[in-house]
Amino acid sequence: MAISGPVKMVGPGRMEIDGQLWWVIWVDTDYRTLAIATPSGAYGFILNRGGKLPADRLAAAKEIFAFNGYDVAKLISY
Image 1 (tube, helix red, strand yellow):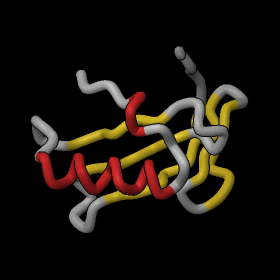
Image 2 (image 1 turned 90 degrees about the vertical axis):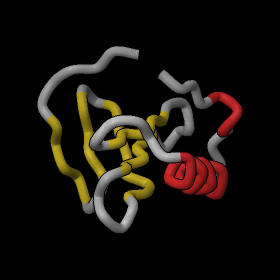
Image 3 (image 1 turned 30 degrees about the vertical axis):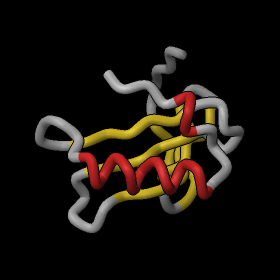
Image 4 (image 1 turned 45 degrees about the horizontal axis):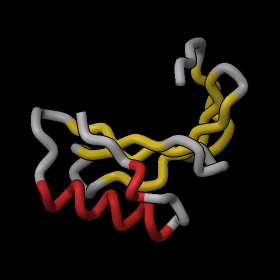
């Protein structure tokens, strides 16, 4: 999926980009790792600062995706 355009904030942790809604569903306590997803469940990703994503924060992000009904088996690491 490719999207581009300005980010319009539509609520706390809620944004719209090119007509697509995106939600911040989790951030770790030090704001190093962020999980963002579409409310439809079609797309989601994990962003991490400072290099490789540590296993504990990856596990926490996966738990959040699963808790919110996303299929974590579809997550792909790059």
